[in-house]
Image (cartoon, rainbow, N blue to C red; front, side, top):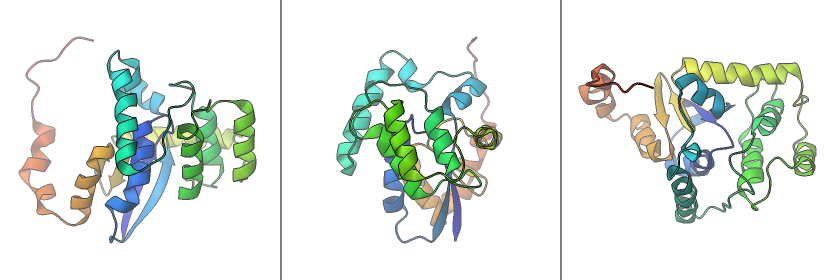
Length: 213
């Protein structure tokens, strides 16, 4: 059985799209998924990057493409009332639903839909209270151990090479983005290309020029 880790932040529409698509992409395979919430903003800060919706032009494209991709998947998706937003309360809620900070698929689905279905404000206190009541977390989302668990999960993701969400880890390999799901499927099917120089030598390609930041 393949062991996968799905790194996500509910702030990302692509994470929701990949979450929905994953079972269909891996249909017929024996696998188990550990869902790991991470703070996307923490990844961006570590790598010195802006998020896609923080870049002019890329912002509106991200929203339009996400809506189009959802239509292609037959997935209900509406943009929230405001985006980006602070996802910490939702990530902590998800982590609080499991003793080890790894929420079930059902919990992840509920939190994703809270953000991406209905076009409402994901940070509205009343909505958040209703979601918390419905999920019945084992720990308080505001507990220090829950906050520490999310920080640790983000730090571990960075240590494993995660730079964006969604990312899916299997063995020592990382597959980033919704469009990497077909690659993940090939890898899990045992395609020899993933052991060839075309795959393994990519890390050794020298940079011809580096821009100053």
